[in-house]
Image (cartoon, rainbow, N blue to C red):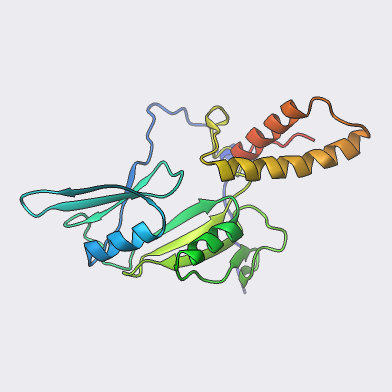
Length: 215
C-alpha cells in the first residue's frame, strides 16, 4: 500500500526567533574533469565568476545560476563526495520556458514529470500547482539538477519583508498571474477596480511569500 508523504508547515511549529542571518552562499559539487565541467556550466548560460588557481595546484571554479543568491563551486580537493552523487533543485517560475531555453542551448533535459499524492507521474501537473511540475538534466559527471516550478511559496517559508523578484521574467510572470487573479476579483466585486496597482502589489508579495492571497 502506497504511503502518502506528510509535512509540518511552519505555522504548526513553535516560532523560533532568528539570532543571526545565515545566507547560503556556495554549494560544492564533485567533478572528475574541471575543464569539462567548466565548459558545461558555461553552456548553461550561468554566470562565470572565477577560476582560482594557486601555486600548490589547488583550483576552484565558481558559477552562479541566473538570479540565484547561491553559487556553485567545483575544483580540486573540495569535497570527498564522488562524481554523480550531487543533486540540486533549480527553482523556475515557468518550467516550460526554462526547459525550452536549456534545450535551445543543446542541453539534454528530461520530459516533464510531476509529483502528487499518488507519487510521480509523467507530464506537467494538470493544474500547474506550485512545487509539483519538474524536469531534470545531468552534468557530464552525472550530477543531477532538478528544475522545479514554484509560483506560490508555502506559508512561512519566505520573510514577507524580504520578498523580491530575481529577474525581469520572474516579475513578468508574477504580474501575469496577478492580472488573471485580478480579473476574477473584478468579476466578484462586479465593477472595475480603480485601485488595481495596490491590489497587484499585495497579491504578488503574498504569492511570493506564501501569505494569504487577497480576494
